[in-house]
Image 1 (cartoon, rainbow, N blue to C red):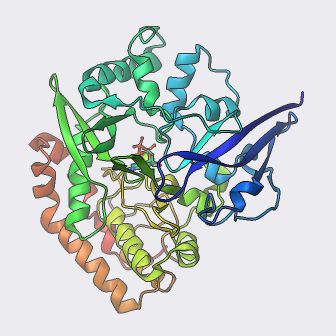
Image 2 (image 1 turned 90 degrees about the vertical axis):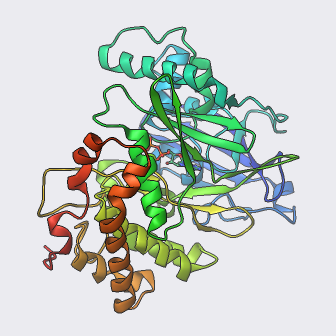
Length: 421
Ligand SMILES: Nc1ncnc2c1ncn2[C@@H]1O[C@H](COP(=O)(O)OP(=O)(O)OP(=O)(O)O)[C@@H](O)[C@H]1O
Ligand SMILES: [Mg+2]
């Protein structure tokens, strides 16, 4: 069966607060996988302020772009779509798990990551200001709990709860329960704990963000809110900036898009910090600074065993015309059993994903660093992690018990081994 769907793609241009129409996206499914087609509108291209949707694929031109990869969804469009968590909420709301990929795109609200919007009208819809206020957090946590419980038990208890509130966060990616909330200072991602978490995720993530900051890295701002005995993490959205006239939006492109890779297991071999560094070198307005920062993050991930550092957990951001590496986010220690060898989720040196000193340093040139500069970054980051992980984790309000539970994540034995196999 062939089906064809179409929508307009809107964008908030740098310095503006309202959508303009950038182009048209058409998607065909011929039964064997989707094919996507995107074309910029002529009147958009004629605007002086017009910008490209992403730095690698959809360059600003009159060309008709076509892709059969990733089921026909261009990277820039996929980055604007919900991920595991958002899809669960949308399915729940629609009362069906049988949605087509295109439906997830159209059913997401207007709070998606980055500067794009989608709709069926050639003219973008007027602004809607429908964000959750931080006051609603308790209701949001209850709704998130109900969905998580339902997934575990297959019951129907989530129906009728405050899911409509949760819908206002679904287009942000990621697997963990979350929502988007607004306060006087702007927009935040609220990340909830799950009842089945083995430790206090919100506080530990808060502590990891603080530790990364103590290591001199550029990190998303965060704070903890406690409601009815439960903690949740608020991470300030770095792709939105509040002004009197409304929100400025920054374009965002994930490392997955920069790598032209998919999420599938088969494409994991293309997940690579070295290849991401090459893309940053081409796309960034300041490659030296961004690559030094990225190398620092790789060392940090190895030092705290943040082993879920997949390419959706890295992004480039453009507030104006120019692209830069985004602040770091989603940092979590994994206290796995292995003490000898741990692997990051992405290739991080000439010898693969091996999270140890010898492998990390082997790729120094791809980050535009001399060997001794790379060594200095590694020593500085691991030194700070050694000195500060406990203090920062405790300062985030983590219990002594939780600290013990994650202790083995920090500076595991094999980190300093000289072997590379
Ligand atoms: N501070 C931020 N500002 C803007 N966008 C963000 C921010 N933090 C995260 N994002 C976007 O939201 C997505 C989900 O966030 P995050 O990675 O923290 O969630 P998660 O559910 O823990 O993810 P995972 O599935 O990797 O565990 C990210 O992939 C990124 O696109
Ligand atoms: Mg993530």
